[in-house]
Amino acid sequence: MFKFLRVPEKIFGLVMWLVSLAFATFLIGLGGKVVADLPRLGDRVTIDDYVTPRDALPALRSELRTLEPRVRDAATRQQQGRLALDSARNAYNAARATHQNWLATRTATTDPSQDPEVIRRTRELDELKSRERQAQVSMEAIEREQLDLAQRADALRVRESDLLRDAQAAFQRAQFWQELRVFGARLALTLPLLVIAGALWARKRGSDYWPLHRGFVLFAVFTFFVELVPYLPSYGGYVRYTVGVIATAIVGHYVIKAMRRYLAQRQAAAKQSEAERRHALSADAAVKKLAANVCPACERAVMTTDKAPANFCVHCGLKLFDECGNCHTRKNAFFHYCPSCGSVGAGQTA
Image (cartoon, rainbow, N blue to C red; front, side, top):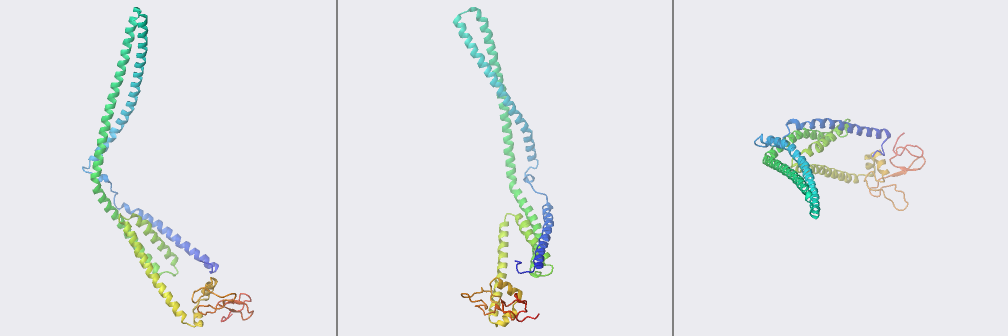
């Protein structure tokens, strides 16, 4: 971009872009703080605000919060009760197996002196069975309590879901209007920025303060596409694409007009004499175009055949290269001074 500029011009061009970007950055930061505060124009609506009756949802949630620790406690007691029941059942089964083995021995020996021992062991077995039954009854009570609590919690959750579903329509309407208000505030802030940016772009390009104006244009474009477009309501896609269509149409209109003016200028230049066309050309622009192997007048590629030097444009006849009047070195016809001996070029004065 800066290949054919002087070194200070390169530096100044870069510095001006840095000034534009810095100015845009600080404007974006300031605008972001302002835009971020716009939603505070109204309190954020929640679906709870539209549940009727108003005290039904807090009461349900309060009861649910009360039930939750009781459900957890019942689950813990159920685990403990199951362990106690398993322990009692295992103890009874072990004692029963031992008792049956002992009875088999008693039958085989037919010793009457062992009858009191049979009675004692039977009583112990009955006591273990009673403990197992007590543990089972306790377990059944805990499971019944747990089932009642779970059913009550499920009923409360279903009721909460019904209340929220009934409030959904009113909540969505309120949310839509709140988003619309916030979007309107953002739009009221963004549109003037876009108008000012468009005016600066149209009228201030090339002015002394264009780097600052360019920074403002960058800020306005950023504000529109980053601070406004993402917060559009549900129909925002239509707005985004509509803006894109309009912007493309406007840019296309000016591009087409610019192309027509360029073609008209090329046609008018083609009718001029070689001297008139040369006089109308800027020496710096001509040197730059020739360095790119393009004719400064008709802007077509410089062409030649075999090894013949391309001293003239084959399309419009413009002289491109000549000889130094002092050292006869072939040089660019638009050079002010001969690059070999430093003599003043043709048509130039020292």
